Length: 212
Image 1 (tube, one colour):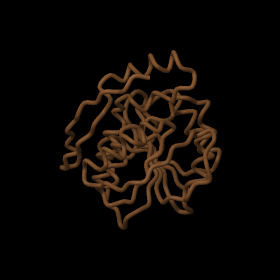
Image 2 (tube, rainbow, N blue to C red):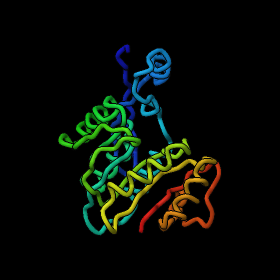
Image 3 (cartoon, rainbow, N blue to C red):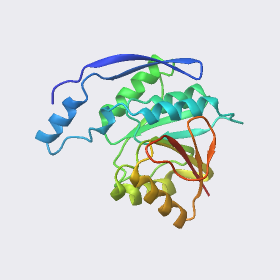
């Protein structure tokens, strides 16, 4: 697999500047994965707008105390970095070790040099510590992974904790929300502006909050 090249993005989020290195040519990973059946999941290298919207909501939210946070599918680490800026303790995780290393490097570039990282597949999760807050962006695209996600939620969430999922309004999200309701999760939907939603949106960003 050829080494990836990166480009620097300077993002203004909640009045804070975030420096982020992202893969310059993410399609390179798609090509490599098509040739190598053992290649890591390549989705991490894509730029997901939901991560930006989720990050803005993290920084605009009023937190009463610092939380322990696990970012699932961290990619370049934007959402986790926003959580760090909000005062939380963050662990990055992804199925691709390249993603975890990049997220840690981006965190260091923003003044957080010692952020923990975990590499694991949602379908075969290790025994995890429990966290107050689970964070993710655009992870509901494959309905076949929903059961694995719920298993990870059960394993990694502290009693009384919550889950934030930034979602672009995919069709598969409605199935996920139905499954979450059947499993006893309380669901709150919020728009990009922070307005509470009565129904899930199609093709537009929504923040999904789950708790018990």
